[in-house]
Image (cartoon, rainbow, N blue to C red; front, side, top):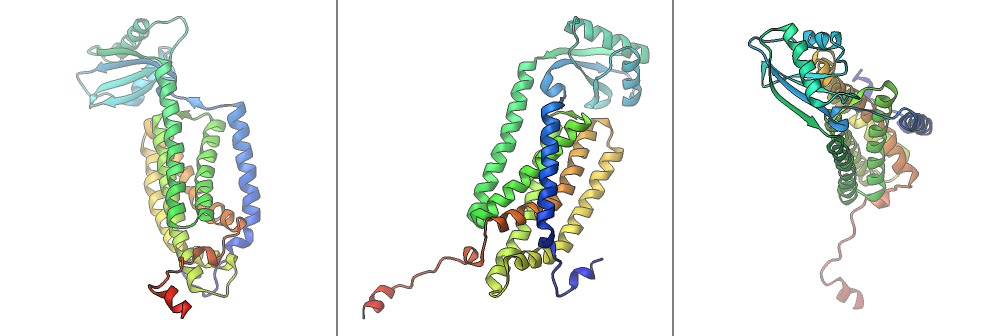
Length: 314
């Protein structure tokens, strides 16, 4: 495969930029439609609920705990080990007509059926107001990250490239959230962390391509903008494919073997890496081309020599 990338002629990526733009607009429209009609399946981090810490004398399996809770009519619980394999942290969604103590007692009774030595260590309630604050802070964190990236790329490169980079990052985040909305995958704080990871990963690919674009604009005088972008993407394609492939190996392992606790996190990374690679090629570059980026925009400003004014007067 990499022999193809060694050809002297660049691969014609920008030839398909209009089609890719239409495809992205359709996908983003579908994502907004799903977000507006189905919404997001907010997890307990955002909706609030009851937190129960249970200790056992021996290690317990999480799958067995979930089955026991489902059998007791306590579905929708998030179960994870807390410190050791003998301690569990169980988070229950709020239920109508049930107070915190009743939920805690029901969880403890279910755990004592699983193991008679089960003991409740902690019982507390996380209010929805805290969850709302976490949701606002998570959205604000993503927005601030995009604004900082816009400033950084604008200073390092040029505002047309910067706007393309930020648009591609927003594209990745919107599509990931749209898929989560359509499939009703639970969104918790790990998903916010995954979205910020996707932003950083996608930006890394975009910066590599833009570095080569700037070099090619300064090096090649007689070339169209589309060809400059094609050469830059072709030159960096092997690096992009190797990086994406090695990252996907880890993420796929997390997706298949990581368990229910990080399933959403791994899903967000899978979507982000796939669409991040695509958007670095087509969204960021195509948008910069649409804004009319040219060779003149990439040249460093001329530096006046000392005494040039006096020489021009003589």
